[in-house]
Length: 448
Image (cartoon, rainbow, N blue to C red; front, side):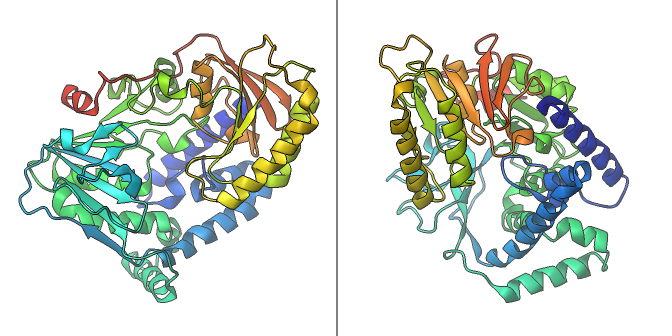
């Protein structure tokens, strides 16, 4: 089965699955089994894939167990806020690390390139990814963070699971959907932020949208309490298959997409009404950001899958390449790596392969600049739009490879079982680069 046909089958099975679940009493917004993200192993997507290929059932069991046990690490969340009088018309819900904050206490949001101080009528709810707080914090910022570094609390795990059983009257089907760290985190976020979400002065909520359960639960709660409020979801990345973004009753009122071709994909395959989609230039990525970062680079992913397999696939690609056909290439370690030691080890392995295949490279090569990406990354599409030839090393081609299912503008050539080459028929069709004129503040004001 081709990659495109497989991805189409996954989407259709998920649609059928959601139709059945919607007829039951399951809350799809809260359910981890209704969260079908593809960039990580998720219970929702692995469950659907196990129905296509029974051999993936063991993977589903392991992923489900991982998400269940992860509840034990969620016992220590606190909300940091100094707000006394709520005077905000808008709210932005985002993620940030300590390095994203300025010394004056304002936030430089990674996803929208916006500074919180320039939007004084906007409340920023930050899901904080670090432990040590910034020394200063503006009054229009609230932070949800762990009070300490993650540590496993067995008592909290058992207490939470027991609570799920009791709240759902021992209904095992409901328990199966809600006994997950994704669902539990949604409960935590909602409990901590209800006073802000239910304030009648609030008119619009903007979020980099991934359809995570906590986001779905926020939308569901807000809509029940204030039907006039406008929820804006912004798609900030470009995964090859995005079943998590299938249109549901608790989807945003308006979806902001940086790319014309993506609108067709969302309306034709993900059931989004065209009137609820608006195409805009990217808020996150500008063309000039990538002039020298992507050209003739091997981009390592934030999490290393399997050093041995990645190394073998790189060697397979280079050994099949003609002599002097590539410009000299360097390995780029992921700037926000979750495994720096593995990154260093993989870089060392690839550097040795490059030296071994030095006859493949030449400064005088007249071929296009090349970008090699490993796994899933939005930089693949950005490199294509920057006129590079792109090679992708896939660990799981069925959900990591880009196909005509993602966009008819992409030309895909399968070089090997796990290696793909890409080009575009037309530039700036899958994705539109942003610019300084296209600010978040301007976008929020224009959405009515």
